[in-house]
Image (cartoon, rainbow, N blue to C red; front, side, top):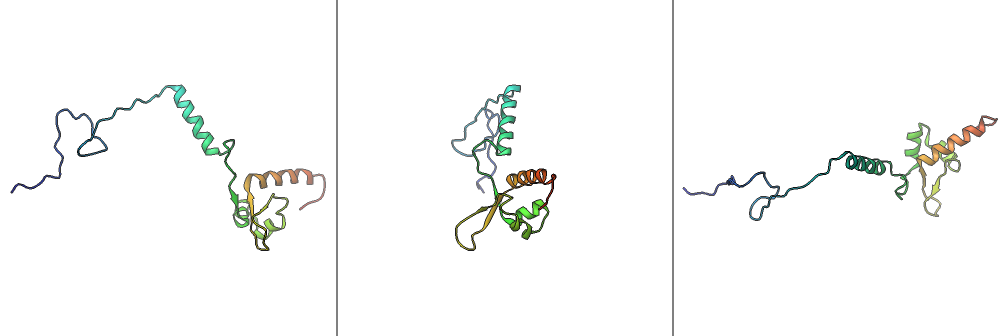
Length: 122
């Protein structure tokens, strides 16, 4: 019986398998620059992308519950101190949610703590 084979035949001129199989498969060669300068540029770009600062990206805004978990405080505490923490009201209605930037909140707490060392408290 002369059935179809599912295993592609290899010819002598194929050096490496192509990700594209079948008719029109073409061998592609890619030149990669692995000089220390090129690697350093890639590493610097990755750091910039991971930090998200200085790239024009908006800060990630957290809900009161998410901020409370990160600060290890109760959610009502976050609402009581929303002005101090730099809270932003999203919308104008009576139930408009509050959102917080973690970095802004932590920095505000540090500044407040520094001023409160001269007396007073939260």
